[in-house]
Amino acid sequence: MPPPRTRATLRHRLAELRGPSVPLKALDARALAALAANPGCRRRALLDGAGVNKAALADALGAPSSFGQSQFAFMRGNAFEARVKADGGAELLRLVHEKLDPTAEPPTDALVPDLTAVGPEGRAGRTELALREATEARRWALLDHPMLALDVAGSPAFLEPDAVVVHPDGRWSVVEIKSFPLLDGSADPAKVGAAARQSAVYVLALEEVAARLGARTEDGPAEESMVRHRVLLVCPKDFSNLPTASPVDVRKQRAVTRRQLARLTRIEEITDTLPEGMCFAPDLPQEALEAAVETVPAAYAPECLSACELAFHCRARSRAQGAVTAVGRSLRAELGGLTTVDEVLAAAHGEAGDPADPAVAALRRAAELRAEALAGSAEALASGTEALASGAEARAGQEVAVCR
Image (cartoon, rainbow, N blue to C red; front, side, top):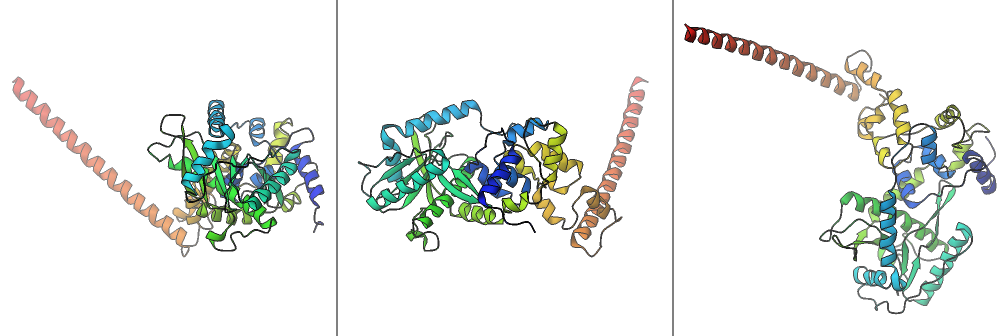
């Protein structure tokens, strides 16, 4: 067994995998939520941990992905966020007070600490210090784009929420600003769900900060927790550019994300299985990149198409191998030990498989029902064709009789 890696050695190894001249692609909360949704994918865990730009890698592999946000949506989101945070965040704090803490005193004189520092580690340290100071002051405080550190499979991920608000009671709330509208007080459930999963990652990171500061977290009752589980989702109202907000309870998403992150294989365990000199730099020949990518096992599912830049490449490989996961995780779970399409067809036709296996028995019963249905359809089609022919003959006879 190889000796355990130190943090510096692991960073050096990940830099080698990324490429000596390739800049680090930071792991954000959106990518982390997608990673937690598929914890069995070692390929994504390694590439995200190493800071590999998966979009550039997909282009180099000849399987580009359209995954990502358009430039127009990005600019619109930035403009809306700037409006929400104007005047020292007065409107944002008003919404937090109204939706999350209406019994507290109004945020008329809130703290807005300066969080600038050198590097993500420095910014994370400055954020932690600002949270401590604001909590001890027992005043409203707005932390604009704080930096939070979260341990992911043994590698630190630095996350940047839109805002964190400290309440007068010393508790903290996450604020997520999105550019999709709230129409009559509700929004697209899929978009709200994605925002909730992203906010749950920030809640987990804040809980780690609270634990380091000695504050009470989820080990105690929810009402005594330092980090609130109701985040504030700020969006445009109807079809205007005026901000409105809605509280979102992320306890379920937080629990799921925490459990899934705990299942992730540690990055050093994956790197220890890789050959020396392997690299994912996008300027390498396509054959070398394909060999490097295939060295790390993936766990493709159709859901990856909306969450991972390498989804088209992994889908093509999954289809070429005949893997049943290409058609969905739920079906894969139902098939038990049958992992390929060929195995499934052979079991359904009685050419392989244990008849005592419930999955094999169900497949064979389904094949029998399909054969009966097709036979019945063929008989019905033949009867219909015969009836049409008889009707045509009768009409032809009538026409002849009329002509005579």
